[in-house]
Length: 115
View (cartoon, rainbow, N blue to C red):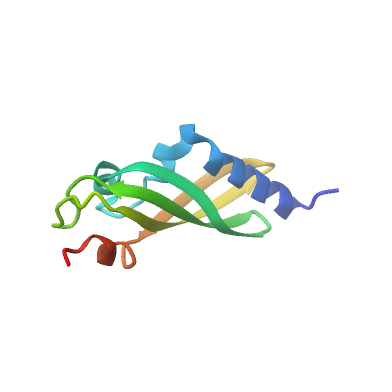
């Protein structure tokens, strides 16, 4: 029999894997989140690490994308980049009832800076 944590991890993993949820995953309270969606194309989401404790599930998601638009004062480079997205989910009875996220731009910006 699966534990609650295992079921919650499965629910979150399925949510992340479903391309229909991509726009939800790209939304954060960070003011530049819409710019990320515009500047980076061909985005692919891969669960890098996932941890669960009771109703809470934390996922570190690796996004690979192409820098195809202006972002943070940087012109498009056409480079493939890796961006980390962290998401916190609350799962009740197998259903995601809330989630929030944040991007790690500290590792993104050096990838698109002019050399």
